[in-house]
Image (cartoon, rainbow, N blue to C red; front, side, top):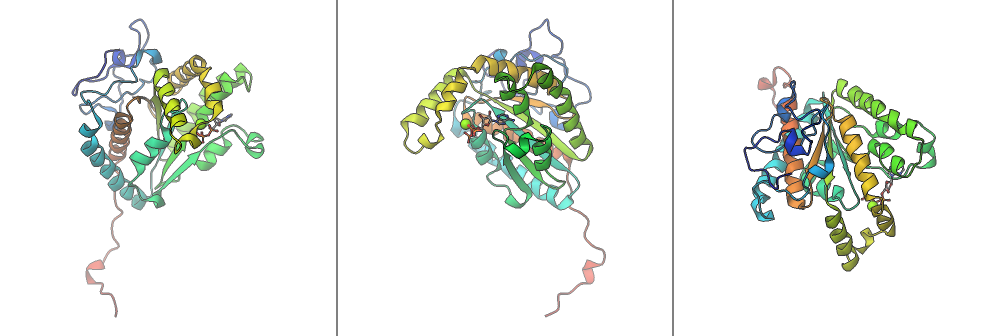
Length: 306
Ligand code: ATP
Ligand code: MG
């Protein structure tokens, strides 16, 4: 993986860590406007291709070198999201589901805070998913996610998601292999159903390196104000790093579809991660083209009584 894609270079499959002998890598026909690179890398895992996660450099930052260089651009993208979300809400015909997945310390919380910080809370809902409670565990695995899926007019953010059921569940052997393997197809159907009902689905894997996770865990331990975020369980999970990477790689390859693509976001640098996620969401919302509904007729003659 070459470090740092320069502006203007289209991230073909080769740049997404595919090996040349593997299927995929070509620009897929039928892309929506949001998926045609507008001059910056998208990091989209091409549907039908075979992404090799180890081939994607988590430290790349395009031509940017430091946070200061992206702050204005990030603000522009945040404003676009805010304005488009207002239209989406008013229009009330389409919705957006943003799925965030990452290894521990990968930055899901920080991404939500920095990308959606300016959005009207009324049109936006974050759902965080932990290990299922007894009621959830007694239902089919998609039940709790479907219940939290956004309605038309809304943006839903999944902090962890239905993908846990092919990630932690697989790594920890919580169900048999034939059960989690079948879930890829069930997940694709679930996401297709949402799409067919007006809900766009965008999925981001925040890709950090194992070294970066170590640094972040150490930082949490060292700072009394961050220690609450530290859990000894994070160390136990870290021991399964390779198994998780393999599970993520399969989930991304099995479930990156035209209707619900996966994006593998280089996330070692938090400011670059925020920029990539923000502009992908803004471009997607723009391609959805939400419009304010027409005003009632005859408003020209209306006066407000005293
Ligand atoms: P996060 O790590 O997402 O920032 P947190 O630290 O507040 O959140 P954790 O308890 O560490 O909370 O994270 C939630 C835990 O729930 C993770 O270990 C995750 O693997 C687990 N989990 C989520 N969904 C499932 C599921 N479907 N089955 C089993 N475990 C799950
Ligand atoms: Mg955690």
